[in-house]
Amino acid sequence: MARSMDRRTRLTVYYLIIVVTVLSGFVVLYNYGMATWEGRPQPLYRSIEVVVQTVTTVGYGGDAPWSSPQMNYLVSLMALSGLVLIFAALPVLVVPLFEDAFRSTAPSSVRGVEDHVVLCSYGPREEVLIDELTERGVEYVIVNGDRDTATDLYTDGYTAMFGDPESDEALQRARLEDATALIANVDDETNPSVLLSAQEVNPDVQMVSLTEDPEIADYHRYAGADHVLSPKQLLGDQLAAKAIGTFDREAIEAVEIDEDFEIAEFPLQSGSELIGQTLVESDILERTEAAVIGVWSRGEFQSPPPPDLRFDARSILVVTGREADLDKLKQMTLSEGRRRHGDIVVAGMGVVGRTVATELSEGGFAHTTVDLVENSQVDVVGNVTDRQDLLEAGVTDAGTVVLALPDDTTTIFATFAIRELNPQVEIIVRANERENVSKLYRAGADYVLSLAAVSGRMLASIVLDEEILSPSTQLKLVRTEASGVVGESLGEADIRNRTGCTVIAAERNGTVVTNPGAAFVIERGDELVVAGTDENISQFLAEIV
Image 1 (tube, one colour):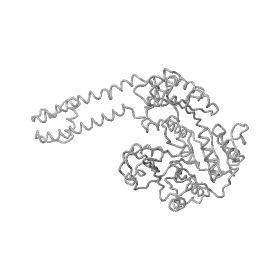
Image 2 (spheres, one colour; image 1 turned 45 degrees about the horizontal axis):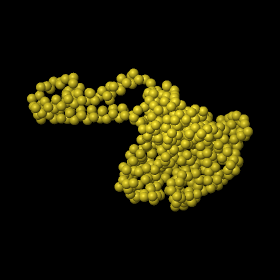
Image 3 (spheres, one colour; image 1 turned 60 degrees about the vertical axis):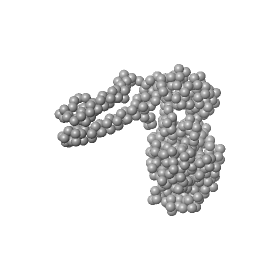
Image 4 (tube, one colour; image 1 turned 45 degrees about the vertical axis):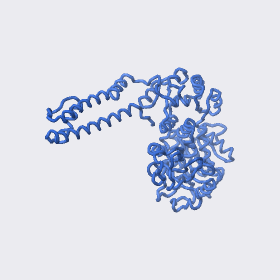
């Protein structure tokens, strides 16, 4: 869970550092003074006792009186310092404790924020967005109409307030007039009302609305939304792209870094010539000129790949290169023996599953759909955790199964069941909660996309006005200057080993240098294109930027 380090916490940390530093300095001086100026050497622990007694104003111990003027001055300074530290503790520690004791609910307004993002409601998507905003130093305010929820968020360290997001007054108390963006994610019917109120308070604020039903997106636009996202439809598009990419040699889902230079992910299919080989043994760079910058292995990203890591049917290669290079590599990741048509099973026919099925139909790919509820779009009415229903859906002969189920627990169980019936099948999975992604990989899924992560990062890309993520890749991409390593070469900066991130390109004076080598020297004003996981990027931003 993302929590911003608030001002009170920072002040407490700074205060404790100052106290420890001051006390340590006085202990050293006092111990020296007793031996040198008073001629009474004593153990260090005795000096610690006297300093603590003096600074806390509880007494001077048994060392008083002192004959030398130096020691008298030192003891007086210690006593005065103690008073300063005690009075400094009042606003930092004591007063906030009393405020918390008497204020047990979230505030109904915020102060001191500007250029912030107003989040109407809170959930997994907003949690991902808050992670991104916090990394960028962008402030946010959560406006929640449920007092208990707002209080829980507030006490957990989030910038949250209680208020009805449909109310002009509540949005004014959230300082919307000073905000850069508003995210409406209450529900499909309430969001247009929130947008109208926001437009009344600040007509110039950027407004983004989310909808579960993509068919009503126009209503949100009529209410003033600049962007309307349907997270489930978006996720369905990406799951379909992964399924189509398995069978269509021409389909490469890649993120363009520069003209004719891209980054992409390639899952290895059963039967690929690369399976069983290490990166060195595969000669990928020599054969394709594409650079492998990392490998996903059962949900864990390793960059660079360890020399002894052998590719298997669960490996996903992360590569950069020209389009022609990526196309050569893709041929190496495919299985020649896999059927190309008629062997895709889509389980779960909600918004996500229907989107996947539509994309497959439009691409000319035959497929079988499975759902618990009978309708015209469902071929097999059944439970994907039931062996007989899976057999009826043709899972044993399938090349790919897309699990678009609304419940992660059911998805995990279904993954086990499908893997038992067909050990070679490719399983592409929807995850509703980020914490279940690793479980799904361990259960046997080949590729997992999190609904919360995809939609949350798409929100961040809109709000921050930069491409920090393509939904088609599990990695985060950031473009940023690296002021902490200006003047150093990439080899000297050692960014990959320090942060786990890979510098895949650098832009200097409008010219993009792709795959810069270890000798590339970072100059002031250079903009680096960096790829990494959430944790890696956070470390990069903390250490390098």
